[in-house]
Amino acid sequence: MPRIKYHAALAVVAWLLLFGLFSSASLAQEKSKDNDKPQPTGTPVLWKDPGDISSRDLLIGPGGEEMKPDLNNLTFLKEDATGFSYGMRVRDSAGREWVVKLGKESQPETAASRLLWAVGYMTEIHYLFPCVKVNGAPATPAKNVPRCEGQGFANARFEARPEGIKRLNEWMWANNPFVGTKELKGLIVMMALINNWDLKDANNKVIYVPSSITGGQDELQYILSDLGATFGKTGSFLSRSRNAPKDYAKAKFVTGVQGNLVKLNYGGKNKGLMDNITVEDAKWIGGLLAKLSDKQIEDAFRAGNFSAEEVQMLAGAVRQRISQLNSLTFGGR
Image 1 (tube, rainbow, N blue to C red):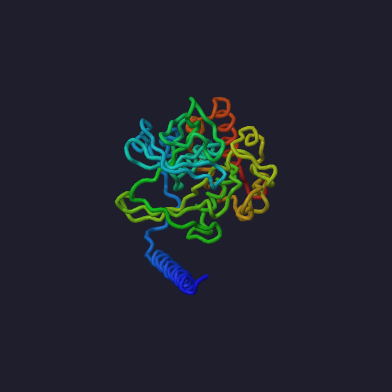
Image 2 (cartoon, helix red, strand yellow; image 1 turned 90 degrees about the vertical axis):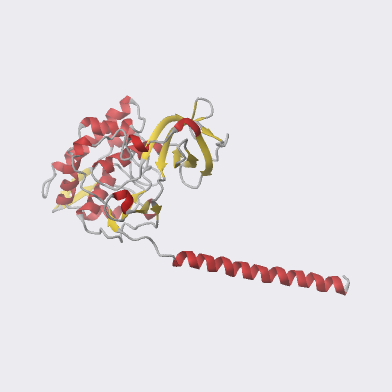
């Protein structure tokens, strides 16, 4: 190579290296600036007194009729195939964005979120539709999902992304503002009641809700953002199931009481959470659940588009588990 071309090539390489260093430094600086941005603050909230539980509509859920998506003209924005379920971000006819979950987890998650909301826990806002069509959606999604009416998507669960609400960091089961409270222990009992075996911290989310929405004060709401691994059976990696009504109906729930501690039949992630549930903890959440009518419990599963037979099977199993909680006594069952 001629000397002039050789030196020119070295100059280009040096320039590229220098540019890369400056680019990396710039990106690192921008990332540092993002991390240094103050996070929204507010009152931590896990649970609120639900008031008259018997008046809660579990068919429509916490978003009510007013927040339902407008399905007349859904527009595809992007897909997400990173988790167990296939998801996509869409915009409805009213211009609101939604996270759509498809597949085996969409039905149980819809029902589970309604049961949690019914007794006062902070939850996502979910709606499920038996069949929707999304303009611009991939003809062949990255994961196999149930279809309907040609290019439609079956059992599509819509999760709201309301304006003004910010999704922040994860929260940890072992380290949060509610450790040791009856509210957190009640939530743990609820996880055993619905057989949620996927209790990993990554499924928990803190959501900032400003006072303009709460009508009171700024809140940091602690929610469970993924409830799809429910209403099957817990156990080992090979034996667990989700969205399996027959498995759920056959599974045991309370296996006994030792001293003042309730023994729950649970095999899943973070199993140790079940070790310190007292009779008082279990009866507190059981008392709230007992205020639900049979129709309300059934409506939670109707909202998830379960068949009539599955609705009766699942609701009957939930009612039986509620009765078990409320019949607990010290040193016995």
